[in-house]
Image (cartoon, rainbow, N blue to C red; front, side, top):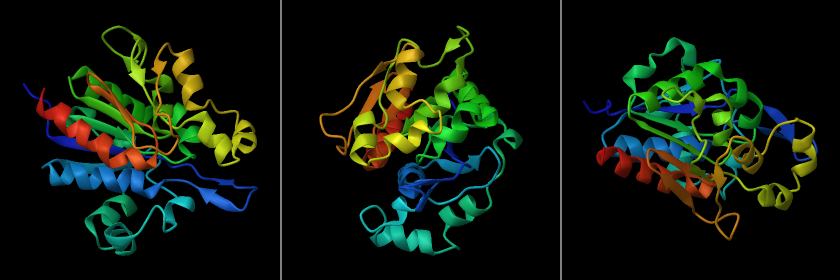
Length: 239
């Protein structure tokens, strides 16, 4: 029996100040909007959920380099399907993970704060994987894998697998390394190493790049959100 053609995009509910305390990090909008657009266009029913049912938009993700044209119009239209779902999200614990064939972890730097202990979201990811579906993430989204277990082996889901995510070099490039250290959060390559995954990246920190390892599909950065989602659709259709 094929997994349901229904996807859950997870949203960080955390927020914090970055850039010397001047700007707010939260959900990186395009990392949820681009997969939403790709998945809905491919005939998926798409839901959004965060651990608390709340979210804060990331400041950087609203700048013209990242949000423009149709994406900006969708974001500004509070009656768009995307905004209505985002602004009225359920808590992850209130959802039935067996209804989903895809789990996609969007992010933003704030995901480093709440994803590692987001047990409601993690449970859904575990159920999707156990039921033969696709589990995916982009940018800082792999922070969700901190406590996601492959229920068949009782080992970390990403153990022995290849993943990508936001590079530590990019954190230095953005001059955020010092502030992130104060959060006491693992960066993505550190998490991969600790859990026995192989971390891969493109030569350029802002290249569109994703890694496919069977039913686990991960993207490196915001620029990779749409291509990662397209890879998810292709992998799902091949199940």
